[in-house]
Length: 85
Image (cartoon, rainbow, N blue to C red; front, side, top):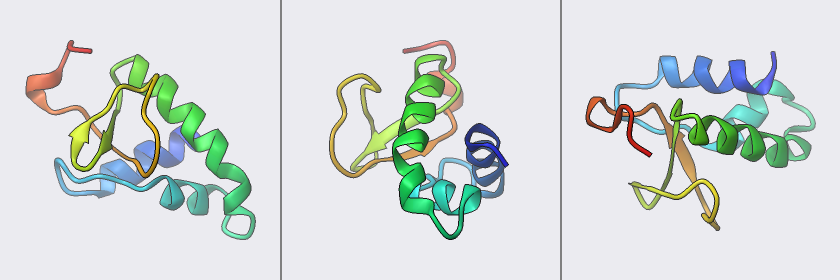
């Protein structure tokens, strides 16, 4: 499974508005070497966030995909966020 597919697979299984950790995506892609996948997960998530297909969050709030640092998660955009960005 590629990273983008793993992100959307896990988000589809999450409750609406709930977030997915990058570690969960990495483990879905490569259970043994998941740590090596984390930078790729971040890069993919940033690209998807720039397209408006996911929202990167920090402390439960949307974060700028170009400047966020530290612990982060991702979720699907909410209806009131559609087209924003």
